[in-house]
Image (tube, rainbow over all chains, first blue to last red):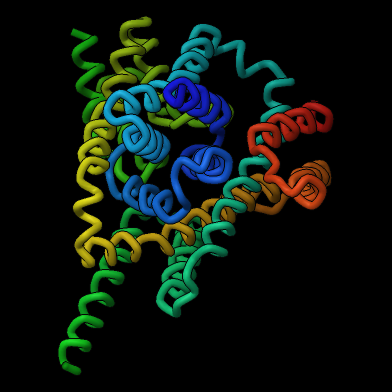
Length: 188
Length: 189
């Protein structure tokens, strides 16, 4: 039964995941953390962090992980197929009518609305993370620097991979931990 | 052997595409242009179409190019190829994570990455917001402003906020996307 639920949930997420990776994260969190409580917020955040630092689409990484956690390899396969299937079918259909699809004005109009919604969903996912983040000076600084840095890079058309920010933040976390440990040992 | 070529090309893309969507787009772009599967202009057009189609960019790209080059089987092989590397890597990570999290150093590294993630996501929202709301794509473009966009934005913010006050539950993001599509048609069609 869980397997069926997992498949349906993933299918739904795959079908409504407009706007790429980060928008999907908002949907995944709503479905699996808030609604189904299959995974808690802390673990979810760890998975997203890991998904960002391993190759491949974030949404698929997170889906595979959740499937594996719930039902092992079989769950992972079901979740991954579920999340990919809608875009495969939709994209396949679009390929068949590619030229005429873009000419339908009602489709473009609908998507001007959806784009605004995607901005809202991504912003609310980020604000939720900010709310649940432990407000230590280091966390606040890392958050502010990545936000400012990435925004500035995009505005000034300077392509820099997000992976650099994330890895640097991981290294900063590791260094802070090692320095702390050393200080404690020195006190002893 | 177009099928093998498609599969291997997308396997490579899936293996080296760190950092999500746009990294993927440039990586796919390189291979696709090199094989002459698409022209630069077709690629740009596709990036535009991509924004109105749900699902991961990588899967959409793989399905589309696979279909163009090799029909249904091509689409299937390209899609499986692009998904397979992350699938295998995540299974390995998921199987090991309980043991790995026992080490405080690993914990510190992953916990350290998390605030950066929030910052990146907010930055994505901010830059997308500038483009969608004000037509601002880079520092050099001029600001254009459409009152209909603001009305839709207000609706999109108001609906889940009011719903949460009244029903004490989160408004489904899927429903919100549908609502926004309806308003898009009402205002822009």
